[in-house]
Amino acid sequence: MSLNFDKLYELQDKKAPLYFKYKECVQCQPAYLMMDESGTVWADRDITVDVNRSAVPGAIAAGHTLRWELSSHLSGRDIAALPKDQKIVELLTGIHEGHTLVFNEQNKQVGQLTKEAKKAVVELGRYLDIVHTPLCTHGAEASSRAS
Ligand SMILES: [Zn+2]
Image (cartoon, rainbow, N blue to C red):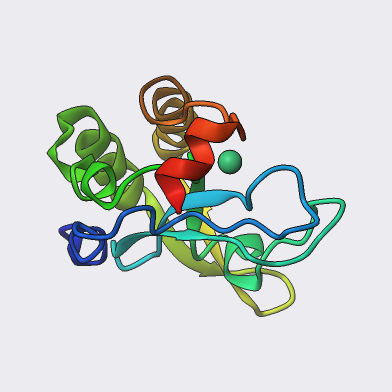
């Protein structure tokens, strides 16, 4: 039961791999750090056009994949450095250990988290907010960094 960060390392040399902005939108699309039930960790942007921002992908809704918001403006180097942050690794490890798939009443496989894992999910969200999620300041600086 170890975590796999290869997909984060693959982004190392990209300038702003999570960045995507539709011309008609003021802000860029949201980006996420994600982990599935096998412990594979990756980061991606959500390019779904959704005015209400309420569309949740099936794997997330079913709890197979867990996700935390990241800044869309992070560089590949910053993303590849996330696994070097001991606190992030500890929290992800704890979440992974408390994350299992079970069958629900509809005989559908859904993710289940232990009480400790649920706490760690919240804590990781707070931590990423503070350390790695500068607000989307879609000014000149943000767009020049991302282009
Ligand atoms: Zn932005």
